[in-house]
Image (cartoon, rainbow, N blue to C red; front, top):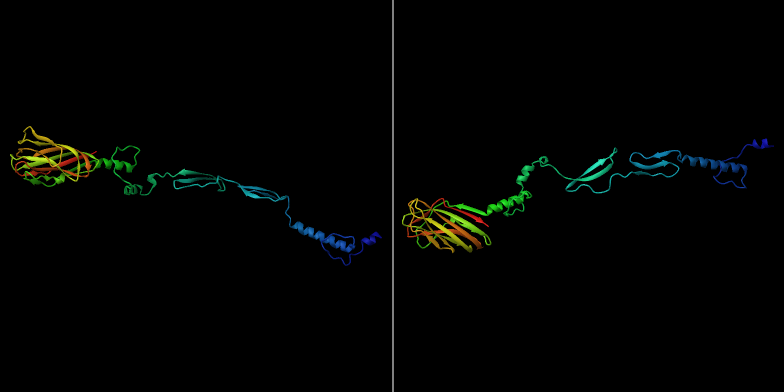
Length: 300
């Protein structure tokens, strides 16, 4: 009996639905459902990864593992987050074998002038922006601009000039300013002014009268005036001082040749302008201011 049952053909068999067997199923229906379940299982397994397979993180990566669970591959951290480089510094970067940044630091920009194209020419041609003359002693901590300001400031404290043409005057009343030897003065400043005046007279019996005149300038001063006696080699001076403008020290005689008179003035300026030597004749003889006559002034 058993053998007969086992040998019965499954006439009418078809693969059924992938569903659970029920108590009302026939043998054919049961086989059809079981086959459908087997087919579905095979199809599902085909889409599944082999859990024995592993995922290994490569160089500079982290994570991975076998496929018994979800796995994440991550990028390892390198260096430190931040901003590198600026107008005054450049980044120095160190990388590992695959090119990832291991470290980065800022280094001040320091380029030797010899490595800068046309540096010397550009420095020479650069304008002295902000230049203001200010007298002082140059020290090692000064910039080039500060040193130039001090040097020019000191130079500006000195004033020197010479005449280039003669001047004459025979008046015993009206003085003539030696304008070529005028000195500009500034309110609030103090001055030492030295005039050296070469002159001749049309008569040895006629002397030179010297004083100080002004244009706009005001202040207090004293001026010592020395005019030589007549005769070359004659010892002695017509000497005196003046403390107001347009007053004179007068000599009553003159050497037959050219003579040199000296004027030395200390001036405390309270109003800006110019001061100049002024001359006239003592007795109507013609006085000629010769070339060169010079002035040297120092501002304080």
